[in-house]
Length: 261
Image 1 (cartoon, rainbow, N blue to C red):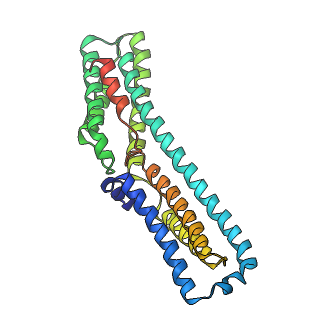
Image 2 (image 1 turned 90 degrees about the vertical axis):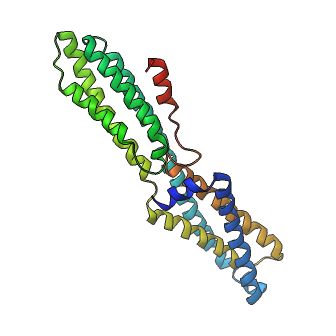
Image 3 (image 1 turned 180 degrees about the horizontal axis):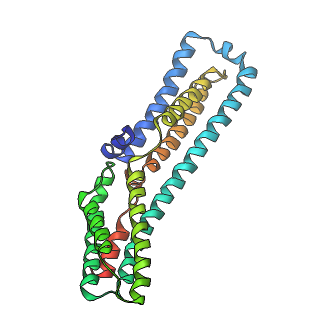
């Protein structure tokens, strides 16, 4: 498992958010106090006209990076949720398209759909760790073998059989995408850039001189806490099937209820 999965699995979201906020605040307060202990305040004020434009450029660059990452992780999360719903729809369509087939084959299809849906529900907690359920893998393989060994007996069956094969292929593709989304979060290099950029932004505020040291500490601390909140949001949505904001398997459960499987 990756470090972000370990954090999301083992630390409650409220505690994790608090740790990140407190850590950022400590970095800001401690850095300001240490610098001001050894460098006079007036030395910082003399360079405000130079530090201001540089900090504005730095802030814009980091703000754009943070905003871009929030949009990307939300889009990936939304896409993973949509793919999970499509997977449920594929199962429902397979169930409907099996109606014209002869009785024995139709019952096997219904049984296979139910077995796969139940296995996916059991698989959900395993997804949080980036794994998968062997029973779900076996269930979809059995559905593929079942359709591979069946020969349509009429023109009507041929039409519904072709539609079922397309849905079965789509089901397999959606399952693979779900497994990939469950274990692939943000690249470690991007995490390094996000964290390093946050630290640089917080540290840079130290080089501004103000009349009131407490006001400076307060403003830089608020900035640090805000950055940590955005980073926490990115972390929570970076893995769609892990953490408190993870995608639910309720749609698979509802499918089992609606189809009586």
